[in-house]
Image (cartoon, rainbow, N blue to C red):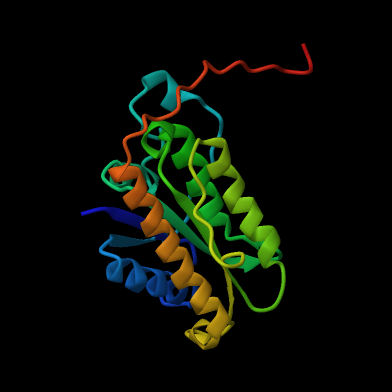
Length: 207
């Protein structure tokens, strides 16, 4: 059975980000897609220090092993898609999820490539579109097709569970789940080969 990894990037385990992701999980199940929900937690998460150790070893693992980054990479190896959820703080995603996303995609890029991805953001009032764009951009750099919905994947709420009252937001989550399921099924049943990738040709403007 196909499987989607859902990551709750909120320090509040049962908060509105979790509410949005559970709505997605329920709809994925209706489409015959399994899901696993992982909580980043509320303990310190390391940021990438550009040490390059992950690329030197080539084992799809980050050099730091104190948080869930490597666990997420390992789980993704057996998953067909990923959806990251985050609350909005000062118009930005949570610091924890940014650190995890940057490290997991850099260290484990080969595990993530060609798998559909999406982002979900939850806010009290504003800043959601900026946070949404911030989290979505790295996926576009990693050859990951973006699963869309009927609107930006945003829902509103402050107190725990309030996002469930956002009828349009919850519908957007379900539509996202349907589109993600459709993409995964198409990829699995399609006969077209994956696109051939040209060797990376970086160009620095300062030499």
